[in-house]
Length: 425
Image (cartoon, rainbow, N blue to C red; front, side, top):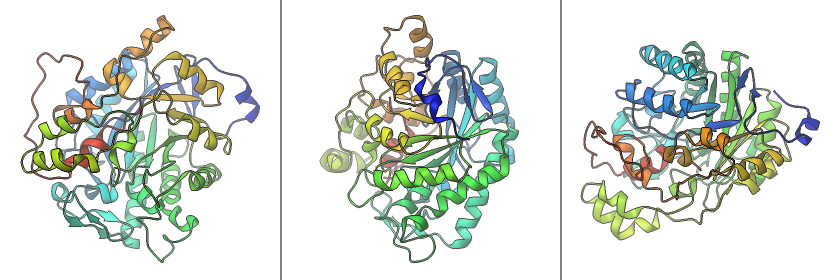
């Protein structure tokens, strides 16, 4: 679960095989978790399978299915994949199809917590402390100890089902102010019990989750933890605490790799991405009165941030210097140069999102020609296409199916649109 620090002095080729826990990937590239919007009634569809097969055929070492909820109230969308026995046949078909292309496949598992959609789920969103969600115009429910014990067990059950369905890895979602991340945030967590106050207490839930996952699956599949480095707002979880939590995750021996991320789907959605905030396009897919509201005040909620290649690298390097666990660099991975930089800085893997939405065969073409660079221009308009299936708007989609149903008037769609596409590149 840890590696010899001397091994990091040898810079690997990103296109050579690598071990991730018990799994050997054909290369060191990973399709990042980007919410596909292609499941239906919380089950796998042929469209979802085709989506991941396309990326597997395009050359990645592993593709990631996002986002698979461990409990009904932990979904951000009512059609989101939910871990339960009825989902297993479709998930087995999905993993088999990806394996047939020579790639591994990971399932991102987690509980959305305060980012959950109470209207769609028919249950209040859970959070560490009472929080008024401005886009759903509702209060969250404070998670009880019984709630937390159930959700921790749900993570183990989900990981067990993932192994049974043929997944090679699970990615435990500890970021973006989903449930575990909201407990880590001093701004959102005001509890005075063993889950609040000190960093040790605020990190308790995240550590319980990964330990339960390890207990459930042992070494049958790889376990990745996706952890925030910066929530993107004053008073939130930040890098100094992230370093300590990363060390605790390593000491737990429950994690095979770390993937560092940033941002809050609850309070600052665009901090997840960098690049343009497509306000006009968001307004275009919303019903009134949300359409007018986004045009008038959307810029207060959906901020634009300058984009640069490898935009999470500098912060992630600080985590890298404090842990020996294998690490996955996320954020602005667009060409061979930034991949080689990541390898030279001690990262074992790189994860691509938007770049692969633009060009699913990008990895194959990079292997054929090292000068190849992603055509993604980071306009983030792909975020507004999730209602009919996540895709790059610059790529024509002849015969694409329309959304199964028109967008509802639930204002939480603004947050969902930012969260569902967790891409970085």
